[in-house]
Length: 111
Image (cartoon, helix red, strand yellow):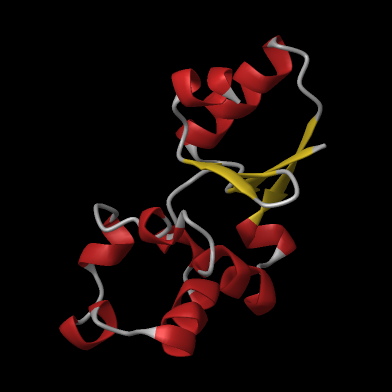
């Protein structure tokens, strides 16, 4: 089963969920806000080939960060993302590992 990590109120996440449902793809939503986000899972994501796509540097939350926060690395960055999950580009599609970050129907069709 595909797990879609995101935020229930996010327009992009809603579009992705509708798209998956329309194609009969079994999935579940893991809402960052209500379900939380495990630090170990974040670490696995940052060890994946998708690491460079995970932080949404175009978000309102990113623009509100201090210069010191924007350059955090390693565990400090993971803790920041855990505290502020809206910094994560959504949705994150996970089967056994990350299969896609962000909603691009063409990419998902190929999978």
